[in-house]
Length: 323
Image 1 (cartoon, one colour):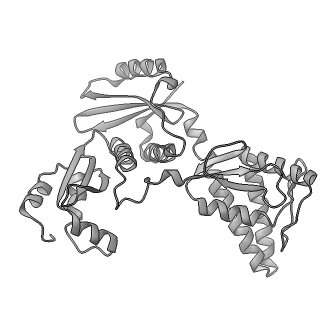
Image 2 (cartoon, one colour; image 1 turned 180 degrees about the vertical axis):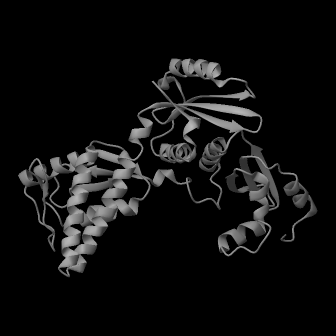
Image 3 (cartoon, helix red, strand yellow; image 1 turned 135 degrees about the vertical axis):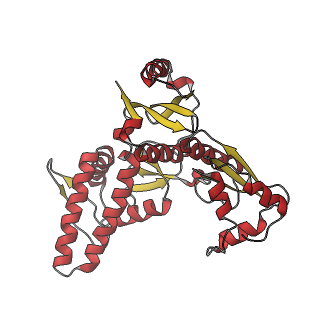
């Protein structure tokens, strides 16, 4: 173990092997990092067991003088609490989930001869998102300029790559605008566009036009990123469901509607879950989302991702879909 004070070593050795969050504090008592783990004891101890290869971690460990922790019922609780604390405290050594104000929207513009799409920081008419990577969105808007105008004949898209972007007149721009709105509104149409881009990429590569092939590849990558941000969670979060997550001394239920946790309840060891589950669902159905705590549009991305990944990591028998 790295040389640390006896007080800190004693505190680390007494951290329980349970899920929760931990806070790293410096000599002034400032929280410099917030983390989470399924096993707090193992995770916290790992910071002091070896010489880390990442300079950022080395620097942080050298500053740690104290550690606080909070035990949670489940790993899901720990992840949600970690996210909330990072957004509230803004610890200097945390990078993810801290700067959600920088998340952006992709907007289909009104008539503008030079820009059919824009990257904006607030939701507005014909905007899609929010999405984390402003850089990815800016790159996509630039790449698509060389495909305009894009036409749709009812079955497929018609477009050609132009070395220099074409300046569209108002009528052409408005037709192109409608195509873009349909693209980002309909997952089916976005899938069709991506497939046609793949076909063009393969054709370009087979005829040794590697530069064009790489451009099509990058556009596909950008559109797939936008598609996942807009539609990636729609199927799962269009349903009501209950998670049945084991805890150290029982089970915890989470009632989820439209991607929002509306109700949680922890039960001690119980002989039959069916009766408790029925009552829990009835209480969950009685809750109106409008009366629950709202999270701002951009911050919701991080909470949504946590919930989505946790649900997908659970065995099927821990997920109950509610009619």
